[in-house]
Image 1: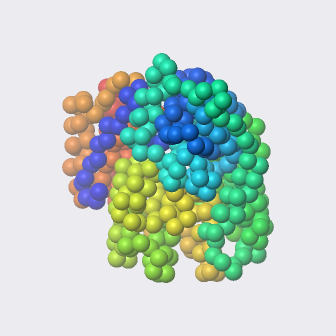
Image 2: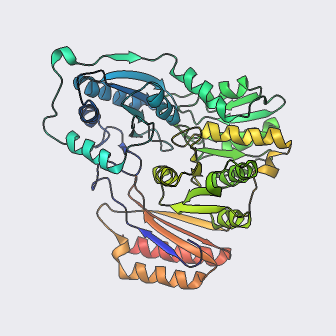
Image 3: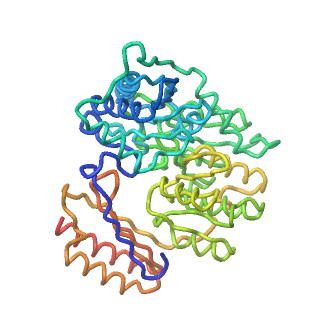
Length: 460
């Protein structure tokens, strides 16, 4: 995606397809995130995965939103009605669901979360028995079943039971520690951890403390409504202030379901997913453990990361936005490291999806080994100036079919030449058009992105 390339991705709205880019998502108590639809999705998924009379299992995790309890109970009823045994994990990070789906030999796993979105949104993500998110084809089959008037139900004697798993979080915490180098500890390090009042509010501080760190927890008092509110990976300012105020060595910012991470150095500066991926890729390459000397990233990753890796004779492959696309490419090509600028870091040697805590432990391991400051490790490359505009759309409209918008894009491409790139795409989870540009010339970047954005706003 170097040079004057422009990527235009139309995408599909939630009206076009029940499942978006990362499961079913929407405003709580509004279609499709209603208790009724959650019940139907549970029954549909149960019917899809229960193929015979033997025991079939589903594990269900959730984040800390008030509405997650409503969705959990509804899905439990749906799964049980089709004869599935339901195992309730309680509030756990999304990667814990992927891990426990495999380790508990479940047929399907469910995570109830809207990730980094505000409390009033929620979502449902499905994992297959291998711990990976379901393919589009399987999701569409489940959606088709859910939208039927009558889903075939189990006989009364076959109705499934629900069991709460009390040690689910403990199982995940022990697993998460495997991402930290053996025979090393965090003794002497002061670490701020911002849990976004979300799913990792218990796990992350405990894991860091058990590994020897002095832990300063931030946003670890969820009340059902404060998830991601002015905290976490999308709002790292609170953690940055805490790092500076406490003289901490590093800060780790997770999002509501803990599959994303941002890092804060000792000066309070934020390192995004691109910097974290650059560091891990470089270290794994030095150790000979970076599969095929390749990092898988998305079209959103900064050109500076690509240039840095090329200078190290490493390859970067780009996919569409969404960690599921990253994982699909990793599985197809046999790669073990990938992720997104937003902080999804996927390390297939450990996990099947993004894991913010485990990625943070990789960084802390590098900090301990190198005996350097976080600011020296977290600034792997010089990013090109990047600007992103999110423009609200009227449902059913498509500015990318408008001649004036296309003309503005063509003009921007010509202005950038080989010095930058444009990426214009519809969001898969919200009614937004995202206009992103990168360019060596920051003033030109600002002008081009705003001209295109203004034209989109004029016709939306």
